[in-house]
Length: 100
Image (cartoon, rainbow, N blue to C red):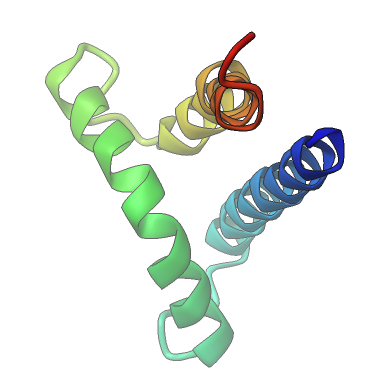
């Protein structure tokens, strides 16, 4: 069971690292602005938009919304690091060791 716990944790770590990398690539791509015609840009936007759009809506309701800088990638990265990753690891522990 410890091996399954380790495999799930490593898989989740890779998953979150890939999501974070894609968000960073989207930030860099927004600075370069190649347009949506590029297949790479379209794929990157289609993967990251479901993650960023809730944070963008949250910011639109706050006093930070509507500015020139989009803070949604920063909030998404913080949420992944502070909430999602530890919560996922906790769930893995509960699934692999239910009688702890």
